[in-house]
Amino acid sequence: MGFPLIVRVSPPADNTKAPQMTLHGVIASHNWLDIRMRVIGYAPILSDQSWRSSKLKLGDAVYAVIHHFQLHPPSISQVVDENLSRLQQTLSGTSNNNATNRSNPPSTTSSSNNTHNKSNGVNVQAQVIDKKEAACKVDEEELSSLIPRVPSNFPEIEELSLSELNDFVNNKATLDKFINKISVVDALKELKESIEMSNVDTATANLALEEKVESTCMEVETLKQDLKSNVEKYRELDARRAAMTRPPEIHEAVRELTSAKKKALNESDEFADDWVESGGSDVSAFVKKFMDTRVLHHTRAAKAERLKMSM
Image (cartoon, rainbow, N blue to C red; front, side, top):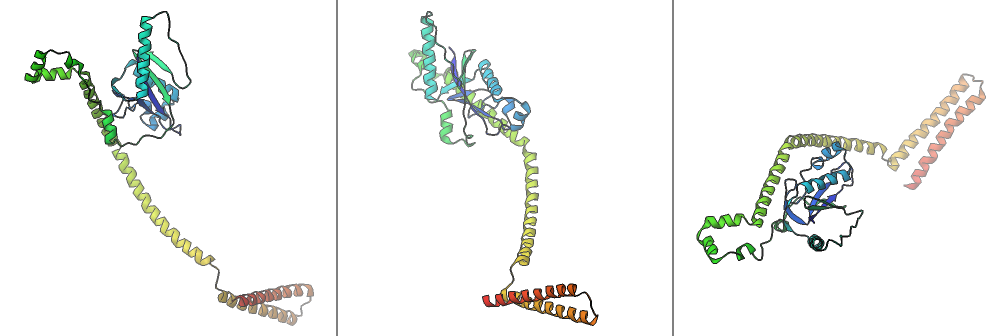
């Protein structure tokens, strides 16, 4: 029975965005993992553009990552998830029972959510979850959790004789050589190298985007200036619109209506005088035009009177 691991997948709401995959519940070192145990070595999920270009389905991408970890297992320095630890103990116990009792084969269960795959001594469990991305900042508590705990005992030392212990005390080179053989020390070195590589990769990625970021900043600044100019122009036009559409003062409206009614009265009188002097013959046309002008006169007079009463 191999060592069970959990790959946690966070699919984005937008299918055009790259999913995130994380090795859950352990502290490990691998060239595909960063300090947060996030998968950074699988090219199709490195960026949204890479994901769109790959045209992969999420299931195919998850399978590819799981298959890689099966063929190239990560170096596990510590299990930090209690459920995963219990699962490992359960599987380990099942493996021991099978070794002593071949007549009772283990039962096999399948689930639509969790699938166990065995290859090269590694079991990988894929879980797809829907949650927001973790914050980019690594606080002290999280950093401490990434570093393996100090062992409560050292079996390697307990098995040594007194003369060997004295040799360690008196010979620093021998002590250093012995320490470098301890598995926890190797795990810490691998973790240190993984962090350094992750920092280098992050810095390289940032430098690669430097020119694009600068050009984007310049474009944003230009758009900002254009926006400022357009806002000022909008405010000027809006002020003009407000002045043009603002209702007039009552006394101003009364004054204009009074002037307009007099104009309509004069026009009707002039039209009547001209018709009489010219000896007009079309009475119907005269009456219609004359009455229209007089109605306009009385309408304006009525409006002016009503406005005066409201003052």
